[in-house]
Length: 309
Image (cartoon, rainbow, N blue to C red):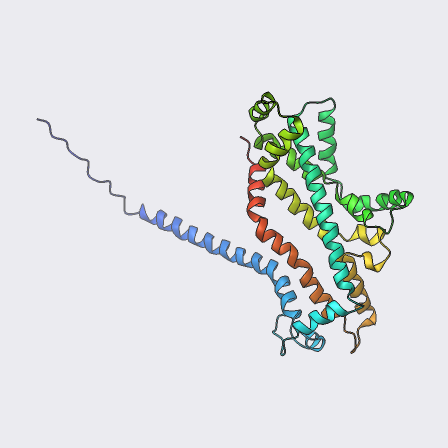
């Protein structure tokens, strides 16, 4: 009969516990620093938004006599909204509708074109494919403002200046969206699934619309959100291609009101600063709503684009 002797539990030397304590205390110090950094960054990003919300509730007098983050003595938000939609015969409502038109048509069209083009680059072989990919990748580094003046000269020859098409057509081109959809389609749409559809007799258009497009939905929504934000905040191109006030988007219209206010257009009867601040708050609400409702598609699209299977 043999007996098994168990080794006594290892007893850490007296001095061994101290490094653990030191490591824990050092980790705690690191977490405190990260927490402070996190809240500092959060305050940095949220303070301008808080300033905008608070000051949109102030009257013109409170706007210049109270601290920026101080609450107003009298809530003036409803009066600011009424003045906003009635000033200059309700031109703000017209600017809002123009912005919705430019953003929906431009961003939606750019996302569809990017989905079709990215799918074609990822799943089809053709002559010059590598040159096309290199050109698209290089186009992502060109800022949109650098192309604004050449676009103006080109549209001037075509007679498109001061039309909605002058703002919408450039928004349909998104090299970054095309490149992102190409990467996403390469992993999200299996080649075996396409071959099975072709064996069953499905054409290329039906295969794309009935099978591939549904698999590309997260990437499509991601490109749609990026392009929606870019088109909604577009300023320089509408500024140089539009001349009539009733065709302006919100960015150009509110900037025009701000210039009038800075030039001395503010008086007791027509204070413009509360209108500019309240209009800016209304202008960001649609983007906030779009991000809240589409964030799960956006996050999954970004994650899938960064994973190589």
